[in-house]
Image (cartoon, rainbow, N blue to C red; front, side, top):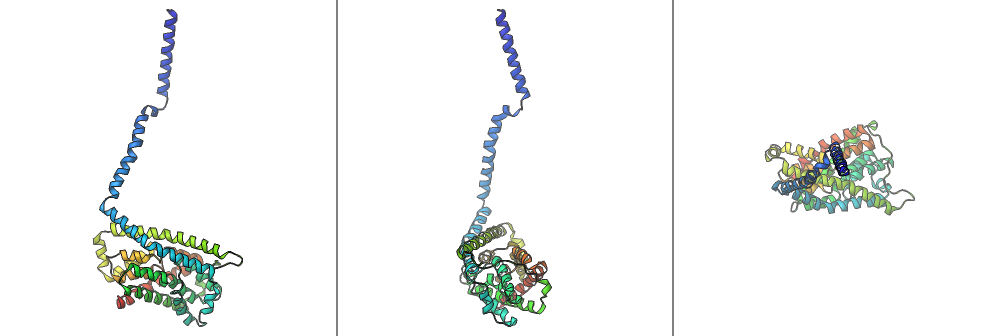
Length: 344
């Protein structure tokens, strides 16, 4: 009997120790069912309301515009970057210096027109221009090619025709305005440019002796496509957000004024930095603006945007990049207004 009582006391003491241990332990094990329930319900609730939000008319419109711009522009982006990579790998830079006239005044428009037959994105045109200058081409002609190549090459003009069906005047206006801007900027450099503004940096462009041309093509194509593709997606998302989020009253303030609309879309092109093979589809989606304003978007974008300013500053120096970019914007806007007013 005594042993039974002692055993009962020992069991009671053990139970008391267990309770004390439970009290001393962290409190969360007691509430694990609640934690499990929260972990199961909170994400589901968030996904439910997010799904409801994604199904709203505004988000459906956003998805439609974003997907339409991306899908329409992707084939042209693919073709343009492939052509740029092929030219960089298989066409020697000395070819450009041989076909240009010796007189700089004549070399500028010829270099500008060369951009109409040589596809290339704006990212590749900067190192190509640096290489041309390093091989003896006058800087004015190299800069004219730098501006025209991504703006009036066959891929870009074809994309513009697809983005603006039944509007050949828009394609012609883009060609003439872009070529005029490139030529004027080349002549301005001849007249006003200073050697101390230009600080060329050694940068490889084209085939290297002993290297595989196909490997250079693959590497260049991969770099240009991934780089430009990222800007395409960002530009498509920005265009979709612009169409959905900006109130119509705000658009009316800019679209109602001819000059404000032109300046607004020119500034938007600089900020969005959409690849030239895809910007026509973004411009076509901005249907609330006038044709001249959308023309300014397509003329300014391939010549001046945030990434191009950074590339030019790293290649030629900041003194050149900021002066050249500011002057290019002014000339491009004026060319768009004058030529667009005459053709559109």
